[in-house]
Image (cartoon, rainbow over all chains, first blue to last red; front, side, top):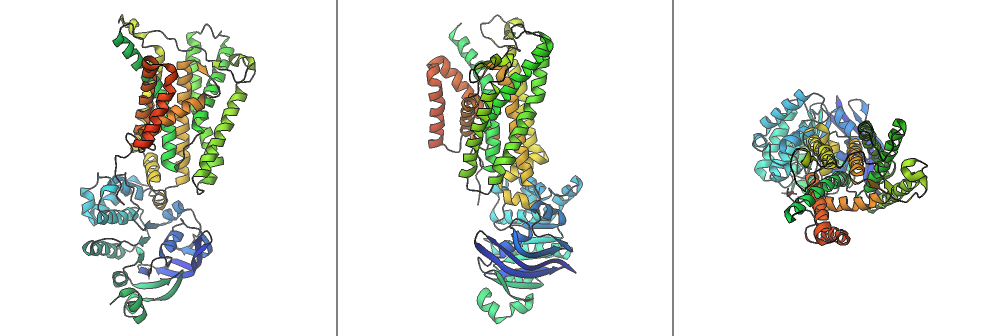
Length: 236
Length: 328
């Protein structure tokens, strides 16, 4: 079953068209990755799904419901949560408060509380830092907080934008392990990454994006062994 | 009166006036914190609050058949009650409406656009005040001179409470001071609690710190911004009531005058920082009182705006502004 189905999506900023009619699907239980160079439109795709960037054309269907151009705060309530590019932690809220904000759309306080406990289980370091301001955390800790915060909204689909950016390899492994764990619990994941090798190793399927269009899509292991992908995105 | 007594007296004046400035400054700071806008109409909103307050007092006195020169306790009680019930919601609603009608449309425009809009709204409100002051009511002098300062009936007596409790001192701490303190301090505590601990308060801080992330968390940021205008306007409404009762004179340019003081206070404390705005208000109140006494009244504005210039040059983030360093 398709959790998310994007069809012929166009979007942009002012006169610049960033997405030139992209289509993709995320199925139940999948990790799907979009890889591509800087400026290919990966972040715009996620922001469009989340309702931050307006869709100019095309459709986004989530669990059978049209959601393109739904206000962002309503998209979250349907079960799409995002850990955005650059983490966007609330710098002067504590770790605990950042997590509470992640659960803003969740009606029951008890669910928010247990969500925070789960977040601390997933990333124990956050528990030690719970009363510290978000802005004082290290980059890796902020990234963990960003993922944990997105999880607080009880997503059915988790959007992750560059969770490995600027992090030490050891921490990247930790975060990717956490993503795998969340996926094993049944959460579908759409992962945008520049670290294509790691992303493709983690994902079930992948899309390759170039200047606003999807140019290739296949099973992750097929893309991992594809000569063109190897040349363009995986290095030697 | 000894020199020490004089000093303590100015301290009391300064604190009382400073608390009023603080209430207005909070409105500037809250709005700036959440939409990066210096809402130049905020002072004029406060001014309209004072005109509404005077109108209400006029109505109450008229209904009771009380002469403004001979206020009865019942008139005092009813007058204050009606003002405190009506003025804050009026200013809150007006502030919310201004945002909805003018600023919200310009949310994604370059920052200069809403700023110019705010100056425009300021002129509109000031002219409304001038028109209001021309209404044919007794309290407005039958509208004979719309722009003239209006006498605000002395509902709260200036009886010295210190002599009442047996202190034979030259220092005066009156019912008026007590009224200002007992309205302002609970409001400051309440605001702190709301901003620090409630769901709305946390959403306000989140929206101020990163609006896109706030939307991604499911926060309806437009609603949160609207609530911020409501709260800021409400505080200006309370300020308008206690200012009128404390100072007994209002005029249509009052918003500009008090607004500049409050704006300076907000910048002094670190604009966007709420404890800073409250502190800045009290500091400006004290500076004004001390300057009036020990320098000369005509220099007071120069000193206050001199402080504004110094702050902007040497510490643009204000007294409490740069506390939390942000890691990018």
